[in-house]
Image 1 (tube, rainbow, N blue to C red):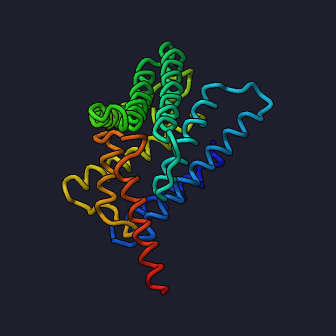
Image 2 (image 1 turned 45 degrees about the vertical axis):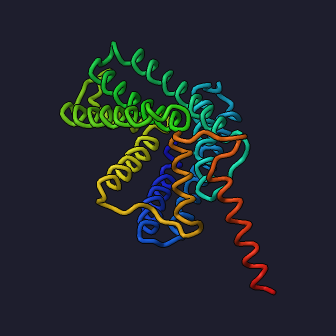
Image 3 (image 1 turned 90 degrees about the vertical axis):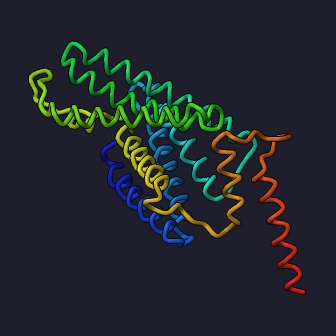
Amino acid sequence: MSRYNPYYYLLFVLLIFGAFASMAQNDYGIKILGGAAFVFGLLFLIQLIGELRSKRNTDVVTVAELFGLTVIAIILSLRVFYIRFPLVEAVFGLAGLILLAAYSLKLFQTWRNLKTKSRTLAILLVLFHGSILCYVASMTFVPFLPVLAEPLGGAGLLLLLLFIVIGWLRREMLVEGEKLSAFTFVSRVRDRSIVLASLFVLFTAYMGLTKINFIPKMYSDEFPQKYFELVEQAESGREKPVDGKYKHEEFKEMYDKFIERHVSSDKK
């Protein structure tokens, strides 16, 4: 995975730049965020294809992780560009469940492999993977069980903070004759857990700072503000579709027709 790190760093810079541009009411900021999410999806897809074509034994857990991440990243990118397809929530939820299964197996494997070598390191890695599990569950359950989404996100942040604080206090642990820190061990793992943890921290920071009005929310002038309010209601699970459609989809259809009629009348 290390060969992809420069691309991840560049994408993180683009995410931060796009977010600040959007908060400064530059409409191109949202497009940068959508493009970065799509490139994340492509990177995960390339790694998935590489894993499937590898001559060594295919790791089912890695395949599940990369498949889930690919689908989720691409769907998030499509959302930014207001592109939807039938049963998108179900596909998103299924990808989230696959990702949950993959990281649950990683958590158990980590505990089993490390508990006899260094119990402290094993506990720290369980905290780390547990935080990712909580974050993924929070993201997955938003459309279906919104009442659980926020507590799970809070639990994920708490576990991650415990990992960072305890890992900092116990910076050296002896594992099979080698002195390691929890941070060093995590950096050597061949999965995308650090990428996910970094993304979740950025998202949590944004959500927290906007809630206390420390920073402005992201901006887009492509549609009226009412449209984004309806989208937020649907994505938070507070609204259920009627005849397979959400209110924001109906709003967008009517708004597009209004713009089309307006443009046609101007041409006349």
